[in-house]
Length: 351
Image (cartoon, rainbow, N blue to C red; front, side, top):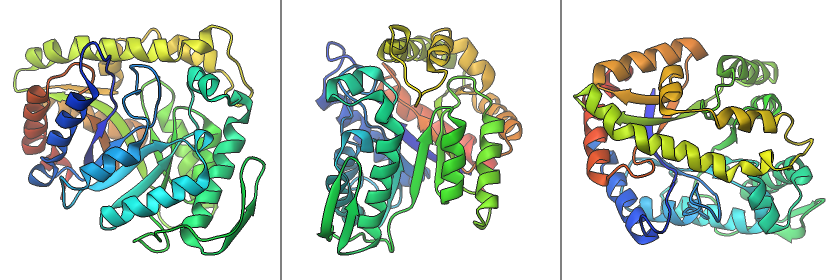
């Protein structure tokens, strides 16, 4: 299994500036080669403390690529619904060049009603915009002199520059919270699957559907699965809980605030059952997250056992993307946690 680090800013400007947050993130990225973390990932969100410090994963990953010579740069995830495919493709080609061919590209549908509202995009167009945008970016990266007539974006005889360093293009991933349709379509297309065990959905069933779709489409192997977890490791288990509990609870609280549009009347056939899903998220706490294995918090032995249990529960997975400085976890505590995890947990899962 690979282990990478993920930056999902959950920051209020009154608590920390953008300059300080990203300086700390880049410091932690600088530890990757020494400690053996295989990837760096960040999100695309807007306007609120939950994710709002990261409106462009590409900007951060271009800087991060200068802090590590080995780790992959992963968008987790770009949102075609709010972006023109010509711009996405050009910037991805540029980032792949800057990173020396270490880019991997995750795409997501977006799910926060306030973002759709501010951009003036209908929730009912979410899936159509996602599928069209992702396919157009694929064409632009793989081919030259591309013509595409879409519902939302059209272009004729255009070649995106710079051309990708990786041929025919960087690997693609699809991010999904809990939509079976997204898991199945990603498997059929032969894309990697990014998922989050946050909401308590039946991850084993969802990954089973992904792998079956992958196999049915004739792709070799079983696909690629990346799961995201909060992680805090300390030699003293009680101290780990003491440090991580309040930041994780605040993270869950700001997620609930960002997604509250679903509880205030937002609805869409593109998001069946989301009111119920967000109601469930509102009940999540540090304790429930740790109980179900979505938060890896404790001493090295405890976390090792948490990982083994989760692997068994979901039929295994290929990569763990770890939030190491969530909410107000200090950069000093995050670094100590990363070092201890690398020294005493990672060797148990790597040949």
